[in-house]
Amino acid sequence: MSISSTAPAAAPSSHAKRGSAGPAVVAAATAADVPSLIALMNLLAAERNGLFIMPVDPVSGVAMLQAHLAAIAGNGNEAVLIAANGGEIYALATGTRGVHPARRGTLDIGIGVHPARRGEGLGTALMRAMERWAASVGIHRLQLTVLTTNAPAISLYRKVGFAIEGVLRAHAECNGSMLDEYIMVKLIEPQAPARPTADTGR
Ligand SMILES: CC(C)(COP(=O)(O)OP(=O)(O)OC[C@H]1O[C@@H](n2cnc3c(N)ncnc32)[C@H](O)[C@@H]1OP(=O)(O)O)[C@@H](O)C(=O)NCCC(=O)NCCS
Image (tube, rainbow, N blue to C red):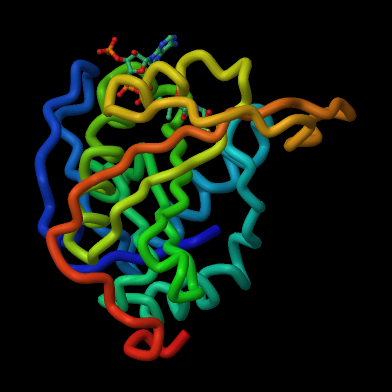
């Protein structure tokens, strides 16, 4: 999983949920969020039908993930955004930009919402927050892959302005089957020049 966040994403924004648990706040993940974040990551990893995310050991993974968040904080290379209420994390989104100078303007995005919190607008709020973060660090191209059968996710991406750019045949192996994925893309107007790779230590 790619994780992080910097200034614009770190400015929390409130999201009024249609559900029962009150408003969720969208913000960058911090060290204190890590245990709950791992619980959500492992829940999503176990689904294995939409977001392909590696499980994390809930004991040894805490220090590792906290160190990772500290390492990437503010470097503009990665973002990990969460939607949370109190200590409960309902949703996460990650964004990772390319390392090579030719790919610095491209961001790969992943997103997952707790099964009990889907359909409440959290995915939309996180995608919009990720776009703001991306623009702020000079990214011009947002991209992701999605199973061609994942109707809720495709609808979300279309809603926030993504379009299908092509089909990646047999791109995902899922429960023993080779499945096609779409690559979906949104071009955005960067608000800042892309930082050269040399500035980021990568
Ligand atoms: C895909 C996912 C992230 C959507 O998050 P969400 O918080 O439920 O999405 P939102 O509530 O913001 O809904 C946004 C739009 O998605 C579409 N959508 C959401 N749930 C849907 C469903 N069950 N069926 C069809 N469309 C759906 C709608 O167009 C909706 O817009 P609307 O409310 O204005 O009609 C979430 O379902 C999820 O985590 N799925 C499992 C993991 C996954 O597939 N991740 C994506 C991997 S590429």
